[in-house]
Length: 340
Ligand SMILES: [Zn+2]
Image 1 (tube, rainbow, N blue to C red):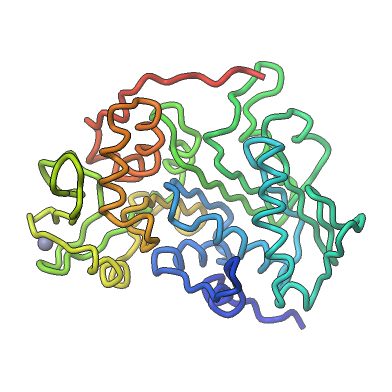
Image 2: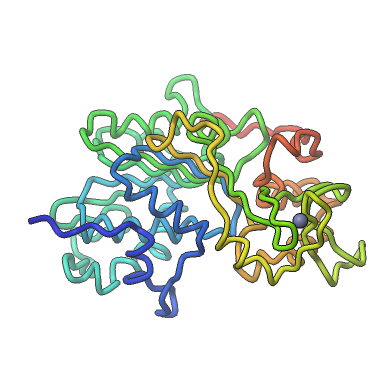
């Protein structure tokens, strides 16, 4: 009899551990994304995100879930081979030592089945690859293909084709194929995660205003309507969120808002086969994602176009594109990555 497979959010609560050994409790917005990973009706997931929303943790937990409940051939593509090694050491190795994993698989140091970029266990394997080398896309057939930070992959060369496309080809012949991509978006019109998001269910997180109850998405805003507001203007010491109806919302309301929030699909025809999510730091209860921190970071880097793009990618790029069409961020010149 196969063991009963818990949804990933339940698995996270029961088995996941942070670096210091503490239990992980997913926030409501994370729980819904996590459960899409283990929903048998979902075969593709695309998450357009910023940093500080915990996507890597969800992926780590899913790898542990796979080993414990549903072994598979898993390919994880990082932007470069260096990133792949770093991910393996810093993010994957600790997971392989969780009690729930050790119950079914031992990953011994320096063992042939436990190399930095290739792990083998009963019934499955995990390979971590770098999207910066054409060799990384050859001769391997997998069930799972995960694209990490795919907007940071090199651009297609004429001979080889686009790395994201090549990666997705690796599980085309699997009868149980599952694919997921998570990335911070780069400039509009040149973003792989934008394209994937458009192809999926296009789910936005709606949260209620604690004062008037109006359901809305959170946006960075431009200081005139809804969005993050702060004072004093130059060196923020206080920040709040302005509701679409003008209410002033305090940071302390964020947990309640997430608790009462819901994902709404703009393209429900793709639900639940290909679920695509749009999420950014403003929703996160991570201390580094407090509205005041987002405002401070914006003020620090706004005069530096290069830094601004990084912050924008993490923040406004995560807001509803239909409401930020005139956003300065989307007009920044696009610098093309070199061909390989
Ligand atoms: Zn309101």
